Every structure is written in C-alpha cells, then in structure tokens.
Image (cartoon, rainbow, N blue to C red):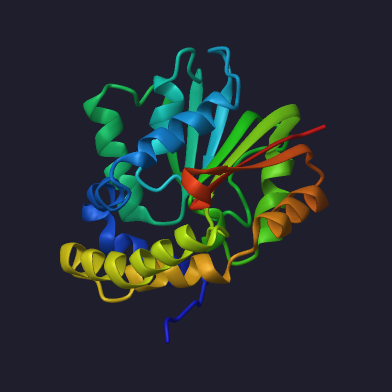
Amino acid sequence: MTDLNKSPEKIAGMFDAIAGNYDFLNHLLSAGIDKRWRRKAIRSLRLTGRETVLDLCTGTADLALAAIDATPGAGRVLGVDFAGAMLRVGLEKSRARALTNRLTLVRGDAANIPAATSSADAATVAFGIRNVQNTQRGCDELFRVLKPGGRLAVLEFAIPTTPGVRAAYLWYFNQVLPRIGKIVSRHNAAYGYLPASVGAFATPDEFVTILRQSGFVDIKADPLTFGIVYLYTARHP
C-alpha cells in the first residue's frame, strides 16, 4: 500500500529525489499536454504585465516561467516550494534565460507562505495543492497573500467520470505511469504516490467548497482533457 504521509519533510524528500528527471517525466507522461494546461491557467489570470504573481508549490518553476512568458506576462513572480532540489532546477532555468530579476524562488511551506498579507495580485498552483498536508490551511494562506480582487488559478489532477475514459485513465495512471516513472527516475515511491494521492484528494465539488470556505468568490471548476485535470479559478473579493 502506498504511503500517503504528507508531512513537509516526507514530500520534500520525495520530490528532491526525482528533481533531475521531473520536467522530462512531466512532459513524457502527459504527452506534452501539461504545457497547454499551464498556458490556459495563466490566461485565466488576465494579466496586464504589471502584476506580482505568487506561484505556490512551484517545483521546477514551469508555471512561474509560463506566467512570465505570457503576453502580457507577469511583472514579477515569487515561486515558493519546500523541495530545495526542485528549486535549484528552477533557478538554473531562470538563470539560463536571464530572468532572475523577475523570478524569485524561495523555500517555504504552503501552510505558512513566506509572503506578506495582500502582497500578490494573482496566485497559482499547478499539481501541488493535493500534496499540502492541510488543504484548507493552504487555501487560507493563498487567500491571505492575495490582494482584494486578486485572481487564483489552480491546476490539479482528477479522476474522470465518463466510464470509458475513466477505465482507460485508471489503467494508465495505476499501471503504466508508475512503471515508466520508476524506470526513468529510479525512485520506487514517487510515481506510486502520484495516482494514490490523486485518488485520495478532494473531488472537484469538495475542492470548490474548500475554496469557498477560505473566502474565495466567483469559483469555477473547469475540466480539461476529458476531466483528467481541472482548472479551478477564483477571486479574492
């Protein structure tokens, strides 16, 4: 049985162990569709080019960089993650593109985001909110850091409800993906944790309720790619 212990130390250690192969596996296992999901999330923020964006659970900073690459893009991005090796990969990408003046990467916990109250114009999370030990606490922190009127975009996996799609997805997610992930990353647990954590995470309706309880309004849950991923959008009132 897969260990779903979500203590910051356990999750950070797991992601640190696969940091070197993380980007390659993301693109391989999603057939490159993950890039499209990220662009759609950034478009939902309706950036003007002046905003400060917080990217929580930033990992190797793919979504943070997508926010800068958008037209118009973010003026500045603060990426927060508790996995130091993942952040180092993100920093290498930022330096290679001479973007360190616009992208700041900080090690920190989603339960206590290292950012001032009402300091971000927009916030994002890509495939990380399910790894937060206390989902409600993480959403409360996102609400705290956002300015009034600030927009939130969250990408997260879900289990499709359409019968045929659901069966194919569960077969791929539970049988194929963990084996490929294990071979490439040489890590036994990480890609077994992924499908287990998705199955244990809140349903779309439940996550919408969590966002509402944190204080967000105008909440939407839009299924992407047959419902294997959801884009949640919301606004700080």
